[in-house]
Length: 175
Image 1 (cartoon, one colour):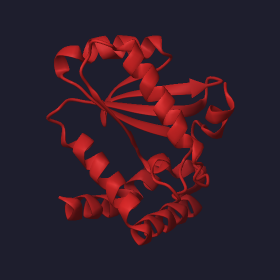
Image 2 (cartoon, one colour):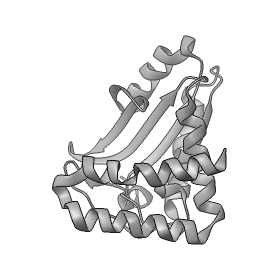
Image 3 (cartoon, helix red, strand yellow):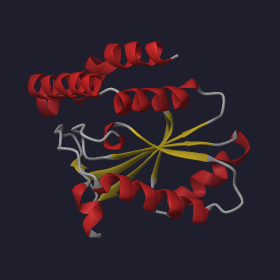
């Protein structure tokens, strides 16, 4: 584990926010390069999404990655990702792959989307809106912290659900 990736990680079944760490962008760039190298003949898009992709935004310290590729290459991509250390969690938001450290500290979420799935576009639109508007970013940070304070470790589902209306409103505004 190198120094850059030690800033990543959240123990399973816990809920905590970490101040933004600019090394997260470097970690994403290296991970994207690793994936591109492992899939040299496959056409796909790859983007850094989620709170770790928004400068100044506190985040659960899990690197969120979105990939978009045709369904015909999905199984090949899955095989390669598993070979890179990801765990295939099946269909969630897209097809979800996670990476763990020490068996219970999640460091990466990778969502593999098909081109027709709107979630990919929505993830990018939400990220870009937060990057472009510091007040919006700060409002989202406050909402997230309030949810963590309210629900704690037992409330990961409530935390996610508590953000839904905010995220939908931002995405709808961006369309």
